[in-house]
Image 1 (cartoon, rainbow, N blue to C red):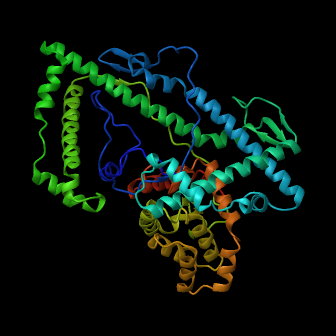
Image 2: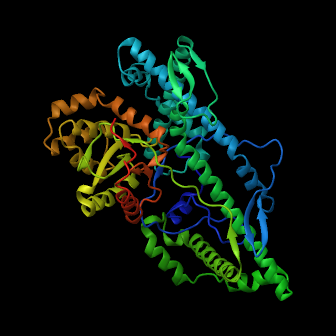
Image 3: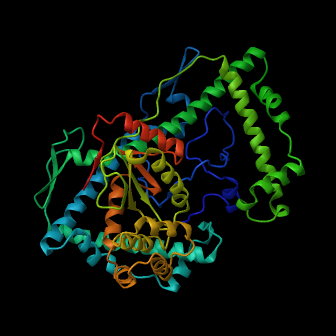
Length: 518
């Protein structure tokens, strides 16, 4: 859903709202990082994270770094950050509980589907998908009115589309929850062993007699634990950088026999000047396509932004000078991206089936970042030829009202051997993905319209799309595009980063890739 985090003008000034905190800065008022991305940034879906768990008592301070012989611990960093870091184990435990519950729900669905003699996808379609109705105009209007101050989107049509998608998602969640409650009452769920530190083969729960092993839970936890640890590392690193900068500033002030504020005033405050009208106009001219409003209405905001950029540059220069003569040894390190078992399923593939490297992409055809990523994927296939295979799987985001139907249409085109040609049209025409347009594109490619229309209108591939989304959830997909190279998640959507992962995969060709075919 489109909940507002910053003003629309500021969003467009911040071309890439960086998730990684900016380090090597003095402690100061929080400011967003600004800079144009060199590559498409993933589009997130709405995610609900468990509430922060607070330890009942402070933990023993953990060493973070050694600065000129002095050890800096969690006791010296921002205490809110410390609390978040110390809650990590509790968050992981909660994630483990949720993953186990998800696996139990999966087996409950499989058990009921087997009883009825249908597939889990068919059961989902029957008991959930077909019961999801369109919200009424009054319901949409009421939601918009009740949440007016939280809506950042300015286009009324886009707002309504996103609200419809959100309300349908809420209804689907309620219907699913009610159905699963009935299944839990019908099938026995038996706890066998603890999930913590159990060998992979250990059976921890049985559902209708079917076992869930620790290995299954551990595999599903990989992306979740990685993201939790990465977030903890980033928070800690930012707080540590601020603490180091403060200590170095104090040491320098003592050396000069002046207050720290005096150094900040001379090195930063007095050197920051308001930008000229010409500089403001130049910035506006270079970024006009991304800035709403005329120059006269946004000039003050641009001036403030440019002045803040200058302050940040001076802060970073001062920090670099202070650090140049310091002996800093970090005792923390960024977590390693895990290697997962990523299924290629039976989804559309391009490239040599026996390629040493398999790229699995979870995509949304209404997602601008996914469209921007396509030339990069095309480029690596040209560069690496038969060494690389691309698999495309569906992950339509709830906030994109036409994405699910577009995914079904792509599957219908795939059934007639025209998947990549069809999705090429979808990415080029993301502003026209209504059902009528989807059918028009089928005609342009010479597809059998009667067959295509029947599949699209009848929801023939809805279950296939849902299956891909369920798999994506298991692999920790929470934004699009989500790309895995031999089971390793691509964390930066750029040609350079993708090539680095591919090269890593090729270098390990003697090791079986972490890709399954079912």
